[in-house]
Amino acid sequence: MADRVLLLATKDTIGYATAPGREGVASGAELVATIPADRLGAEVTVEDVLAEPSWDTSPGTMLGLARRIRTAILADGFDGVVVSHGTDTLEESAYLADLLAGPAARRGAIVFTGAQRQLDELSTDGPRNLANSIVAAAHPALRGLGAVACLDDELHAARWVSLVDATTVRAFSSAPFAPVGRIAGARVELLGAAPPRPPEAGGEPEPDVALVKTYPGMVAGLLSAVVDAGARGVVLEGTGPGNVPAGLFAAIAELTGWDIPVVVASRARTRTAALAELPPGAGLAARIGAIGARGLPAAKARVALMVALGGGGGVAAARDWFDRLARPADR
Image (cartoon, rainbow, N blue to C red; front, side, top):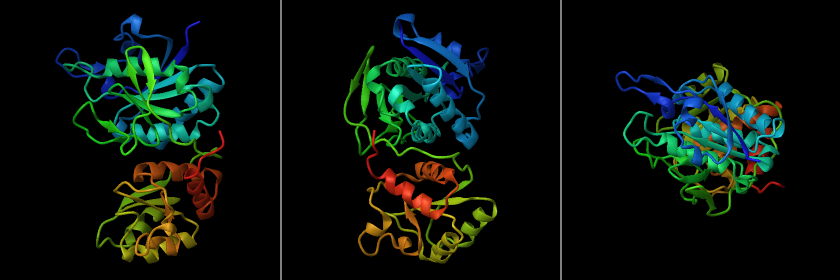
């Protein structure tokens, strides 16, 4: 019996056509039809998902995809799920799905894909990426790896993948880590270990988490403004290993006192060490209650904080969640 794969098609660039006389957006079924039958390698069921453009994807849409993935594997018996997604925020949606997958990550494959070139462009990358993703989603080797991104013949772990070049088909990288695998024709070749599975998530993720990029001379009132607008948590994109302007310290302490967690990520790659474990002079915000992102880039730290606050907790719950993210979880 052929493996059963569900395709959740959110449209975006992989389905766009803009040439005169061919304008439109391909449905999921039309995308599958671009793949030669001998390359499918699975029984594909298609569901078209109403979604915003990737650059404006809402937390509700990301959460809806994560829920459908989990249900498709655990309740509907699919062997794998492919999500065609715009590349702007693919890494965030994939990481949220990874954090919320729970036992579904052990039972089936979860594969996100997209395209840098429109469907009607010369040498479009969409059909190849989709064909590879279906091959990957049907392959038993991906069960247990969690969510991955499949683009340009490579498989990247959701925790590590980042969009690094918005101008070419070699758009995604896991650096400094290696891709976890690659697709060679109809074969899946695993290249290395995936990141540890995250701890089991509890409750509904909190969508109102703000992401603020810091800069020298930044005024503290900007943090108060996002909280006044309804943010239940704040991620600061700092510099170096986890530094933010000293002028924000009083505001960070105040927010922490209100049980609103402040997580400090970095615009650079960092280690998984806690802020308080950094050498003297670095990570000073830890002294007034800030939480380290544990190596996550700011956009993914925001996703992780959304999940951390899902159980209704505040600073203590968020700190515990990020500490557990940095440790291997029981499989």
